[in-house]
Length: 80
View 1 (cartoon, one colour):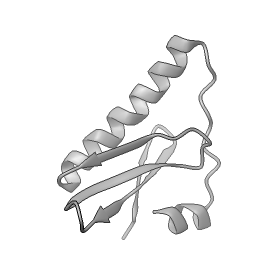
View 2 (view 1 turned 90 degrees about the vertical axis):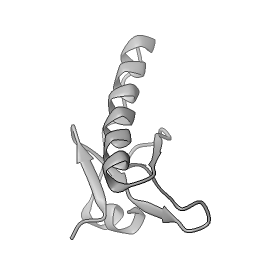
View 3 (view 1 turned 45 degrees about the vertical axis):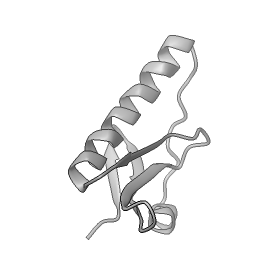
């Protein structure tokens, strides 16, 4: 079983907020803060993919080089 999402070489954490009753996460292995949330796993996955695509599009539009993930097995497990 995996506690992270993967898309286009980016990894995202999967967390549950009991207080808000919502799933949320952020991209791991990059310096930039990119977060997403959803009410169920399906919507969290969709929002994760949109967040990665939006991040890459924003970097392209601003002429910035997107952070490339530096992900090891230990930091994905620790943050996810």
